Image (cartoon, rainbow, N blue to C red; front, side):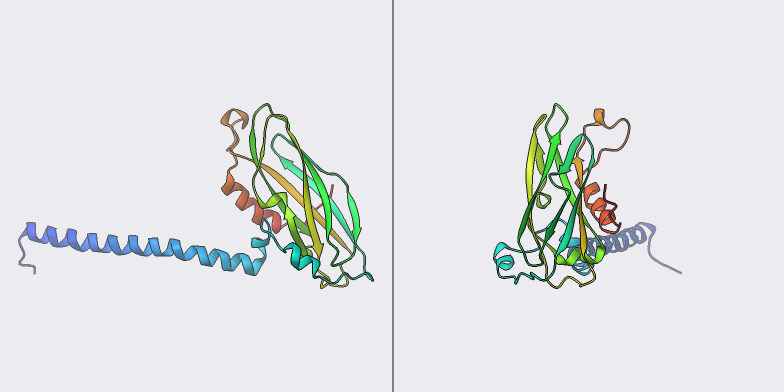
Length: 212
């Protein structure tokens, strides 16, 4: 049976609780920092990290041996979420593995206001993802489109000669998302944000592409 006065017992209890809360807060703070390297490691293992980052440099691409004995058919697809017109300037192209190639996509802002947008790429078949190396791509950064502006945007890429021999066609598909849609334009639905696009990237990466 405790012999401490009630006031002293309360102070002891409060001190003990404060220490426990401090430890929990410290653990949560440390866990938050630990998530960053964990997320990077998961991205590297799954290939998600390759979605919106440069896959190869121009120097690496120029040093790649072109395999003239193989021809890969590249098909281009485009989808838009929000007030955007979006399309490839050509639907397909034949390339040799190791050959540096440039294609153009066109995006149009169909609103009388400036918008921010982000493109997320995906590939089919999924196994081709690690062999499709983007050197330059509009998907690396968010795009700003002024009212009724149209942009022609390049994608510079090379197909790794290590691509499995049974893969003869690769479909490159982009989905363009408007970011931070004004409430008046959302018709009651939640406005997409940069976090929404990050989540969508994982969803798009996990879904097989169905070319238009």
